Length: 127
Image (cartoon, rainbow, N blue to C red; front, side, top):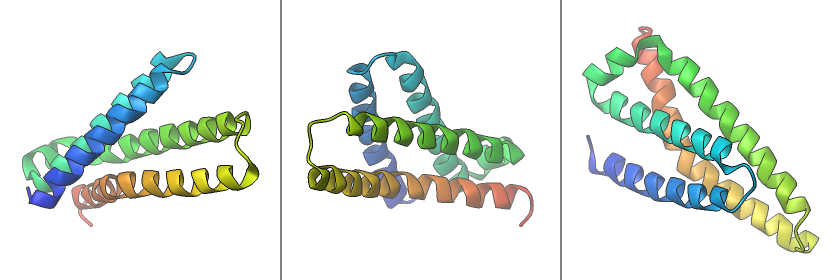
């Protein structure tokens, strides 16, 4: 596995740990923490499976349901975060900046894992 992939997984782990810590501050954290952990495990499997062919072949076509579940969790988590931000004391401009920066960081942290998962799924079905 290349060094950039290992670096990505380390950074992704740190971001996920921060997300879990944030979820502990909210009501009903276990549901969201479970989703964070499941999504993180899937992304780790996508990256490892892409570079380790034995693991990738073992995942087979199950990569696609894993992608769908992960993306659904990310969508619901983003929706929840946006709803929580509406109740904050931030001005409209501060809220817009927060959403732009936060959204960009989320996309940058998740995109490589999901891209490798999608490519792994395509490879597993012979494309």
